[in-house]
Length: 320
Length: 300
Ligand SMILES: [Zn+2]
Image 1 (tube, protein in one colour):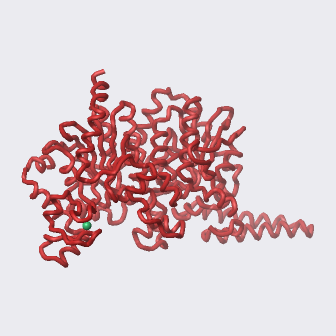
Image 2 (cartoon, chains in turn yellow, purple; image 1 turned 180 degrees about the vertical axis):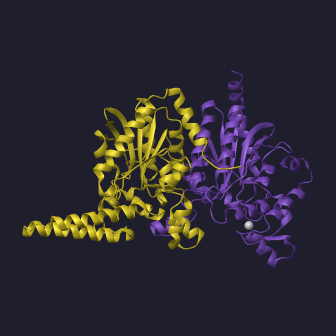
């Protein structure tokens, strides 16, 4: 992933350089007490145009890179910015507590909810502690436990999905990673309480779907959601991971593609240049969407909810 | 088409058809090269030479080392169900190319020709020792048994049919996982099949999952691991992540027998491992345990 401070995506290199230059001039002008506001304004306008041009024309693989950006908000940052009174609840009651999947109680605009999602780290140290946000089976079993708890007390469930994939390792297989993913999918399909899912960053295959069955599926503008990574697809298809740009195109994994295929319900816009450039503004947009969707779902009579959720997924697919 | 197949009596004829269908496989090619007429087959496991009729009579299990050869869906149905009892359902569903994925149509028609199937799963109703069941059998020889829209739709339809008609349900999985060529739509079939599996649980109808070599990725991580009873054939590869992916991630070689049926039994994912010769009999025994309650439910 590279060093988080020096992380630069190739396609916005010119923008980053310009932003750096503006910052340098700012520091210089305040240190030397010289008015350079005209120059700063001129460069800022140039940067805005550049940002607009780059971010309005992202290729699918560039979006995947934005979705993976180390500065993109993590689960706990979203919780901090969007919810009140969060209390984290730990453990699956079976084996252990998985730090790669976090959940608990929180209040969304005064409505008590259960919120959970994969937790990536913000730096290398955190990432190692969080296993880069890739859960083991106990993570998904904790998610299930918290969702069942929410059902019992009539709380809606909100999940924030951001995962490269469920962890592929020896212990994960020993403890039934496939079983845990499947069981969680089944539990969500039958959960008698409203569920809102947001794909916030990476929607990496089964490890994402395990917490992504719900009544509303929302997705941030630059998130992706796919059955396989573009790199994985490229190495299978063209025996060459460098063909990832082509694979990302073919897989149709952007929010726009998925909305067309009716896999997601709504695209939540990000601040220009990606949510990592303005977390507060981005979280505000997400909160607005969450509150609105929750209010709508809470109007649906309980007995219709599961039927509608069933039909929603039953309809997805293409055949003749 | 299948009904006809099951009504034609002489067994060796149909088994022969199956052999022709899968003749392209590497092992047969190898066998053919070394041994004229393809009458002799070299076991992949013990490398002994087996006469093909001996292999057929032994349900495609090596008579010398018990290695279970992979078999197609038709052959599997023939082994499991009462003769002529299979009625195919949802046979009309055909795959399309929703993503315009390169070469997908070409590959589909290639596998359709080779297997004589429209898609990677056969679904319908039949009987096992006179007990009616709904059944879905995957075919690994059709694009690696991968689950795309049609496979997911047919399997979920079969669960729905079982729930509506008070039938127990059996799936036989043989799959590399979700089908890459249909992208996200394939991933969604995991949700579709899982939620349909829930319908049986709600009605107290038993669902038995038979996992065969291989059952992996998105199929293992959906309906196939969610049987009331999970049984597997010996030595079957069953796992969520591919061995190569795991090796690349953890940078160490994997222990002997990792992700094989015996490993999964030991770690609590499977209820039992059953030799191919015993699968039909075992299913019948398990089904009889659930028959009375199902009747009571249906009558009540
Ligand atoms: Zn052998």
